[in-house]
Length: 157
Image 1 (cartoon, rainbow, N blue to C red):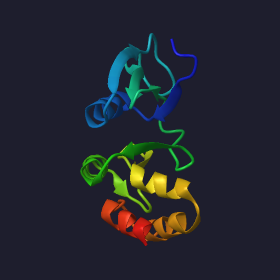
Image 2 (image 1 turned 30 degrees about the vertical axis):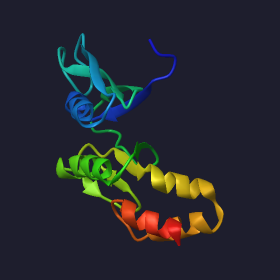
Image 3 (image 1 turned 90 degrees about the horizontal axis):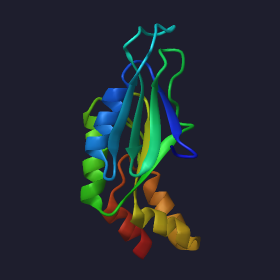
């Protein structure tokens, strides 16, 4: 068992979410699916209670806890992408599967979990600081999904 695991609360469909993440993101998989041994406030004995899974190598547990708590932008997965093709594939998978677009590389999956689909060229530009970071940041501020060519142009000045 991992020393630290991210626990994500889902209403009743943690297994569906885990399976979507496993087929969408590299180095991701579904592990153990555990069923409730008896009835509980938001489910019955035998219902899926928790699902162990990884997202890009990060260990997670999905907990089917009912409708009490919702995901918010206070937590997100930031996924580094290598190029526009990978950025498009991941963004389109999330948004095209009932998710929603947001700004500056952020989107939300159909379960309400936030994702930052972030090309490395943007991260590197921000790390460079100074005028390079400002140009990349200003370009990003007008984007939903990140446009790698526009970030590269901004970096060049």
